[in-house]
Structure formats: structure tokens, C-alpha cells
Image 1 (spheres, one colour):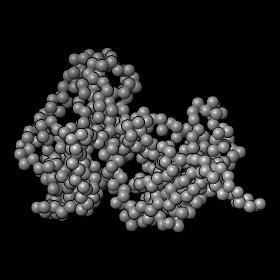
Image 2: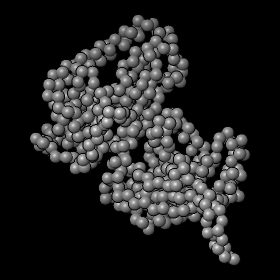
Image 3: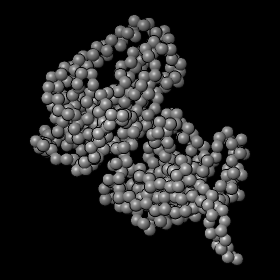
Image 4: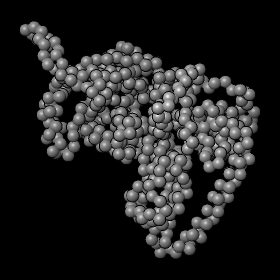
Length: 463
């Protein structure tokens, strides 16, 4: 019997680690090729790791809740091979002994340092690792391990500027800090460090139900006292990330929102005419979303400052038009899969991408790189019969479009023989934009051109 190493896969350029949220197989279970073995969660998305081989579930090296670096072996799968079981065990034994020795050493170090028990100190308390400091910053197991070995205090970790995703402190940041400290360049933290100027980082909840605080420094939220009949429910990991992302966005970008009404009658009539044939031919529905994304991509090409990001006092004008579409999940959370290079796709291609990404998002089948690198976002408030909404910008983008419900309304139409009142299919769109780089004039022009694209939709086209 051979042993296949199941490793934490590479899941995107900026993702260096993932957390095991649930083992789907237990030791001894029969595994077919492509069976889902484990559910993992990153800063970007939750996903499953399938088995590349068939066999039986072997040793699982990590528990649920553990955070592991990309490329690390997380489990073994026993496979039928000519190699004898004794040889495989013998080959594996040194690695096991080394891992046990390292684990024991870390446990001893943790126990020795556990006495002060400062809130958030990067030590272990029993079997429950503390991943965050009192400031709410998250530290990976690798960073905490280096901190223990180098006697880096919690206060020192808190003052290190993180270059990782969402400002996370990486191994490189810690090693650079050690070099600076050795050279006398690093400043020692004061006895009582002042409140951090940056937005607090999201903290992954521990097994004990610790939750992160999403208010900004200097802003104290109102005290909440649950009543005897109230139910207190912990946020799940995704909801915590959404909370952090939204609070950060409101404090990073000065939001301005513009609104416009759009006559969707031509598009509604055209879609009603072609949707049955489309579903019969393609085996899927034709929704309004690909039409919105097509029009949005055209407008973004014309107004590159809306397809941009702010980098300090510079503006990055994105050459690719990667449109994210906010998708509601069955658990009431939200995720934003991205259609890459949307401006280069026809309506059929966009319709296929929209349906595929939406279906896989709802079934937790998205890959991490499918929700990265968005340059603009579209969210559909109309899916829930809302007239419109005032959406929050998806950082580091500078604008987000909201489309409302399409409803029949009486509208005044200007005709050569005079004004008339007619029943039209109307929709309200809103554009929230970052006033640091997008002013009212630019936001208004973008929204007006987008409305013109929709109202002048070619009803003779095929899809």
C-alpha cells in the first residue's frame, strides 16, 4: 500500500495560507478520484479540495480550525501500489518523529510563556491557539512561531506594518523587523501604545467564540445588552470578513451616490422574444445580468477613471475590465465572483459566465482566483424587488453599480404630435463612487452613458 500526500493547493497569487473548516472524510473512509476531502477557507473564498487519486483516507495531520501554509502536506491517502506498507511507513517515520518533536517543543514554549496571558498574546492556551492581538490583528501560525522563537512581544507585532493581504503581517515582514531591530532601526513600543491609525484587521473567531471588533479607532459602538429572550449568534467566518471589508470601505472612500431612471422596455420585450429559444438551445436561462455587464464594460472602456484604484496619492487606471457580480448565497452571505476581461466577450459568453459563476458560488464551488482582481462591481437590488440601493464600494475599486427592480410605470413620452402617457418598463440605477478620484460630473456622465446604452439596445440582435 502506497501513501499519497494531499497538500494545501496554491489558490491564487496573493493567498499564502488557508484554514481547514471541515474534514469531509474520516480516517479509513473509501475515496474515489475527485471526491471532496476537506473544506478550506481563505480571505477570499471557501472551497473544497478534491482527491487526485482513489484509495482510503489515511492520517489527517491537522484539525479543523488549523491554518496551514500553501504547499504543506495536510493528510495522506492510502493507495494500492506495489510498494510494501512497511517501506512506506519506514519512509514516513522520520518525518512523523520530527513533526512530533517540533510540536512538543512549541507546546513547551507556549506553556512557559502562558503565565502573563495578555489578551491576544501569540501563545497557545491549552489546545486553542490565540491568533489575534488586543488590537484585532490576525497573525498566522508561521508568524506566531517566529515571534515565539525570536522573543517578539505582542506590542512589537502590533507595530509591524503588514504587506500581506488586507495588511496582514507576513513572514517577510517579521524577518525584516528582526533585521531592523538588530540594526537599531526598529522603534520599541511604548508602555501603552496609542490607538492604531489604520482600520482594525479582521480576526478569525476562535473555538471559544471570540469575535473581532469592526469599529474604527476613536469610535465606540453603543453597548448592547441581550435580553433574557434574545438569542446571541456568532458571526461565521465569511460574515466577519464582509463586516470588516464594508467598515473599512466606508472609512477609506468618501462615498457619493448618483441615481438615474432607465427605460428598459426594449430590452424586456427583446428578452421575452428570445429567452425560450435561448434556453432550449443552450440549456440555461437568459437573465438581465449579462446585459447589464455588457453595457457596463462598454462604459468602463470610455471612462477609465471609473475602472481604477487609488494607491496613496496615485491613481491606477486598470487596463483589464474585470466586472464582479455580487451574488447572494443560501446562507444569507454575499460573494463577488469576477468575469475577467468582460469587454472582450459577446453577450452569449457573458451569459454563460454569469450562469456558471452564480451556480458555483451558491454551491460553494468557486476557486479563489475567480473572486480576485475585480476592477468594478455590479450588484442587483432588483433580485429582491428593491427599487434601488446605495451600495458600498468593493475595495480597492472606486465605484459600484446597483440595478433595481424593473417595474411597469406610467411615463411621459415626448412625441412629435405632443406628450403622451405610456406604460413602460422602468428601472432605477445607482452609482456609488469614491469622491477622491470620481467627481459628480464624471459619475453622472458614466451613469448617463450607461443608461443610453441600455435604452438604445439593439433589438434585432441574436444571442
